[in-house]
Amino acid sequence: MPGSPYPGLAPTPPKPPKPPKEKSKLGRITFSMICLALGVLAVLEVSVADFKVSTFFAVPLAIVALGLIAGAWIGRARVLILLGALLSIALAISTASTSVGDPGVPRSVANINLRPDTLSELGSSYDTDLGNIHADLSRLDFSTAGDEVVLDLRVRYGDLQVILPPNVDVTVDVRVSGGDCRVLDQECGGFNQTKEFTDTGVDGAGGGKLHLNLDLDYGNLEVTR
Image (cartoon, rainbow, N blue to C red):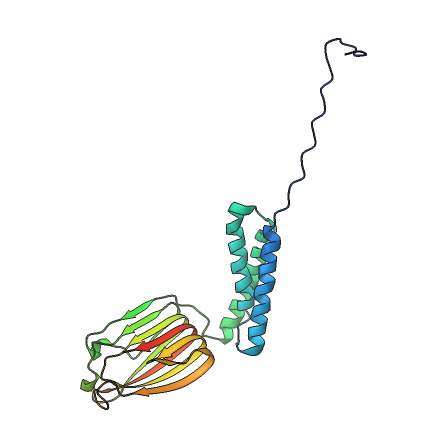
């Protein structure tokens, strides 16, 4: 090369600059979903529902967790780690403060399946905070009880299903905060529903008496024969 102090040796060309790192869209998508979820919760809170304070931290935290999982495929957003940590602390504080004044904060997680053959095997009440209750009472003969049998079933978040024998005379008191509800082919779903149903079975009056108290916060409720 002409002008080079060492003929035959050319200067090494400088390395091209690294292209700027493309910013992950995951953070923006996650923040948008959190804002949308909080907006929906706020509308429901004002109109039809009554959420605990902890709900407004638990829902964003769940969205952040999904964002962190998605980061394994579509690019990480480190700010979500910090946000998740802050939401976890806030959720712990709000849950602890709520539990002091409200013993009904979800604590039990269980699916309850009942299929008794005799009335002596049936308790008077069952409940779960998070899970399902499936009560198949179709094998029971309530005419042997003498008095009316009272059964209380409560689910906070999940499904509640009861199958009745064909002949029992039943009274069903239902309370549903939000969800689908169907009792003996009659609709009772929606928000903040409280209804009572009576049915004497396929044989008319007779066959024993059963009083069901069914309490569901959010989920699906169904009573069939």
